[in-house]
Length: 370
Image 1 (cartoon, rainbow, N blue to C red):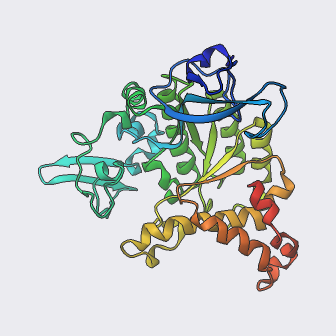
Image 2: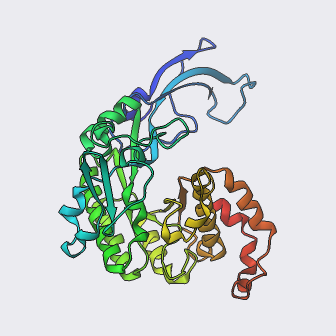
Image 3: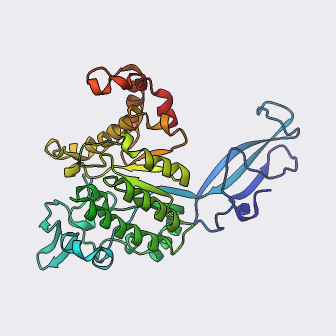
């Protein structure tokens, strides 16, 4: 029988051959500690083979019994997002930096958003920014954050209600406004902003720490600070840490050995790293002049992740830290085949500083591990 908290995952069994069958999971591992509440989940109609002998067999084997099993499995949303309330920075950011933090002011002619003390040039409203599909061809760029965005974007109680309605069992949450963390000048301001967000999201997920999981944002410009923040993230219950594809303004990439203490700390803590794409027009990426219209999102987002993935592989990060897990989020997956294949067939010869990495060019095994 399934473990007791998951007895309802098997909704029914039809004995095709007239035999009385025991129940069991085939090819599915469900954590035993998760609670018995997942919304409606996904119903799967599976044809499963039960063995009389307890050994592996095929459906054509007369020793096997074929049963149709309807299972109800929870959805795990691995890349959910929250919309940070704008008073977060007033309440949690160190006072010396508050005048440069994100601000949103409503006026008769709309909203005005500023960052670093200057008005932003967004062509979309904040409400549209945090609404799925709003930036698509058929979307709207003028959604109002206060009246047209579900409060589940910022309210954990409502978020759980939405998850129940949508059948989502667990959601791992990432920021929206704080995706631009690496555009913040100065290590002190950047660290203070990260800590303000990490404190808020830990409290948000504290409403239901089993179903609401979070990534602590981790700027890498100050490695000793990052190491301390990893310890804090573990204490707060973080599921992962979020890194930028281009983590520092001084040119160091994710393959730099300067970050080895960070990778070691993550392995020791049992936390994976997630490299999450940011706005391709982010000044930190240095590619703002390239993006026009759809190219900004269709090309700019996966391009960031290709860069980050190749830096990790060519920098031999996975060789030095074989137990490290790194994810690359919000850039689709179509680029993976080309990037993984090219990594095995195109040696690194052009730049002298990279010639020492020639052996890393045969990196298909590392890519599969990644």
